[in-house]
Length: 189
Image (cartoon, rainbow, N blue to C red):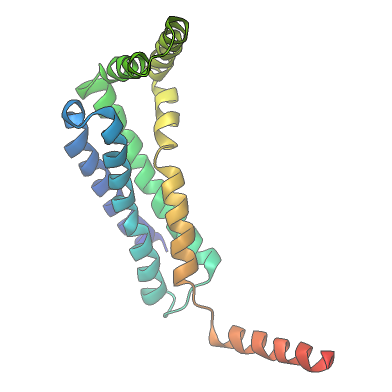
């Protein structure tokens, strides 16, 4: 399992990192509102490797068979490796390449409120909230935690779906289950 997980986890992580590095510098052109869609599309693309990793494990290690639990384990480990790459890349981007990102995002959020016609009191409250957010987001540990929860739920969903689609039980287990089901139907009549 280790080889499959590492191979597909590293590939997924590199894809995730490359897509981030290719898109984040253009956030001013893309805009924060569209940037969310671009970012999550990149995350989904990188997590396609979870499906292929589970399938590879099933075919190459499991002899064409894999349980849901084993498939989930393989998928979630690939997801975790990919998420580590995502987080580490964002830490470099945020603290070295775009140290003004937090302030730009805060300004964007406040401008959105102004454009929506919010009251000055609501805008002031949002400004205080965003100032606190930027301050906390400048702490690398908090930044890592926030960053990890961006891709992980997507990877979890992809893992669950992939494990459900790719699971294949052994013939003996299927035959035993069918025999047990037939016996319970027969005893019920």
